Length: 407
Image 1 (cartoon, rainbow, N blue to C red):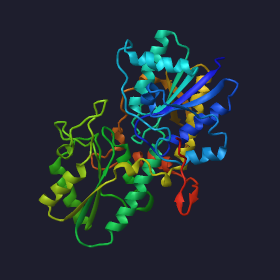
Image 2: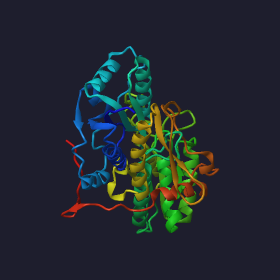
Image 3: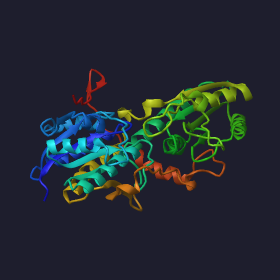
Image 4: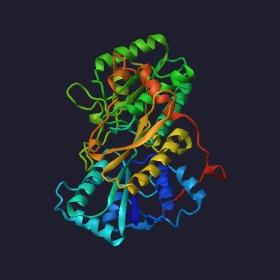
């Protein structure tokens, strides 16, 4: 029966659902005042924690209407960071973090993030056990990339997939306006896994009109086969639309868009990616000679709160609440997970060992990709469809959405 204060942080790339998860954490903490005295929020994740940049959330969100606004707000309301903790527990960083925990009487730490954030959760939990500090640390998944292991899907992915499918539908209608031969290449986020790009298949499944080709990082890319496939598509109709993951690679492992990139890496060693649509557009222009466009969705796909999936937001709130409930039951070093039930779509919320998730990647399975490696299968579409269902209500002022700003 640990009675202590709690703290929550957000990390990694923003999504349009991460604040719904934050809302779930806040609701659960406010509903368990006999165990959790005060809920704090840390600004900009672990970086902010090291700077003691902490605010109180308990009093800030007593108004339930403000929580509803928070759930509809895109990006990370508490701010984010990309910081890798040292491998050695002798590093002063760990002592500094736990000194801050002691200062605020923290007995519960909730960290909302992706693969790299789960690495942080794992290390902090191990350090706490090593030094004997009584704290319960829970990882809460979020990532539009949908590439966390041990969960059917990740909060944030459904809304991003809904945005991509909707945007692709709109691009398709625009392209259909003309009869001149043209190819449009849409570049979608996805370094190692092509889950987001898979969503470009949904318009064809729902309304019968869709992209002609889909390329994912899970399959080796061949420029010769690509040009051949584009030519065949142009024989069928004049306006060809292609969806491609930013992380597609050649057989030698080089990124197709590598020449368009800076070569810089983040603190976790990941190269900054972009530019594959430009490379493919040039190749089409040089080899086929038709009109060609390159469209890079970039940041738009991860913070499009106006196209939130109701299923995504509902599940995001639920896992936030579940994280608090699990911690109150004594769990630590765990991540909250979604398990899909058989039959009509529903999920069961459970927790998994954080070390089964940290620094691992969940790829699009072979059964989701066609034999030519240039489209997805019916099984993939059936997996995707329930995740984009439903719309959320928005608060507007003078025609524009109103968001929750935490300062």
